[in-house]
Length: 266
Image 1 (tube, rainbow, N blue to C red):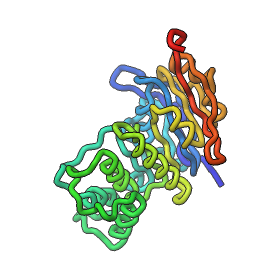
Image 2 (image 1 turned 180 degrees about the vertical axis):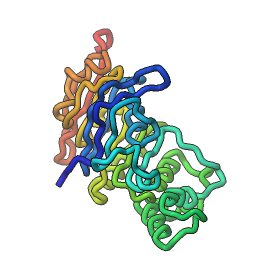
Image 3 (image 1 turned 90 degrees about the vertical axis):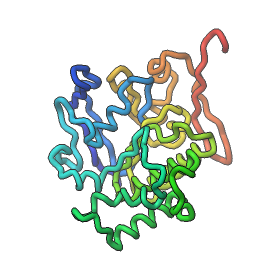
Image 4 (image 1 turned 45 degrees about the horizontal axis):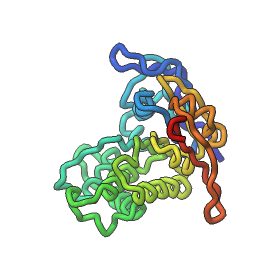
């Protein structure tokens, strides 16, 4: 059963005097996998910042379970929404387990003492991300894919109902991109989690999402299931290029793919 869990209502988003979005209305269900797509500078990451309370709307409201996000105590928001930013940094001498443990901060008292529940959540996050054997490794010794999983492990230790990911496959090779996307689908299915992510890879977005939101120049130009949004008309308008949208069949499954081109080289 799905229901509206997170909502943006007539939201205006600004950076200083520059308006990025005006009168945005979006609803997110529990659970679903949503990919936000669009060209650079279109405001994709700005939406995530508003949903995670990093950016306060200039006007309008963001609601979490029908309550204004701005009025909910910070620790309560952190127990429900977890965000993995595009460029996350931590000291290289931290271990994987230490980083994962940071996800339990919203549950701890002023003295930061760790409970058995915290340890159990950390162990579970490490297990889900396949990092149990690497938990004592220093972050500085990890590959790009391993580091990304370590940050995801920290986010999962928060036990969120909503996970926000800003370009999670950036800097990863194809193998690690696929592993991460498969893990995202696993979290959605097994943990009943809503995943909202910004993706540049259109074929990953179409394959692994249940819904796509297309934005351009601060405007939501399309919002719907993959079949509705992943079309020639929407994608050509979105990126100002020509595209072919087709499907490939593999192991009894059908995957939509997009092939951009120009008249000169097609």
